[in-house]
Amino acid sequence: MGCLPGETIEQISIGYRSSEFPLRLSHMSQLVLDCLCRYRGTTLTAAKIDEIMRTDPYYRAQRIKGRGHTGLPYQAAVKVYIKRIREHMATIFRENALPFNPFTVLSSDVTESNVIAYRLKASVELAHHVF
Image (cartoon, rainbow, N blue to C red; front, side, top):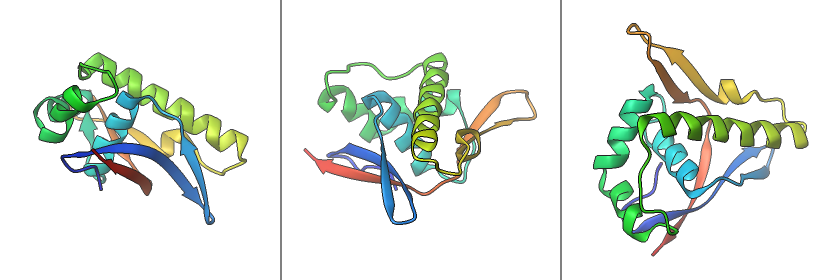
């Protein structure tokens, strides 16, 4: 489950066989992954992620309470954050010999209208911090 208003993401880790592997992501990458966690099981386009992050009270509050970042992602930036999340996952998987593929964990599906939609297919634990 994603963060609630008044909370911020402290750390995102991937668990495997009773071990935790922290993903060292930027604040904005954490927010994008948080959004994917909230809507787990649903495919989200970059436009939908951007819309959620601009209208949801939690993400709007991050503009004020965030770690110095004042903006929210645009559709093109969401795609960059997805790429960075996968790169961090690939590094963690490779360094720890984990049998996962970042493109399976965070999949891309092409919609009928030829738009890429993203879906998180993993249990990702979010450690929350209350302001």
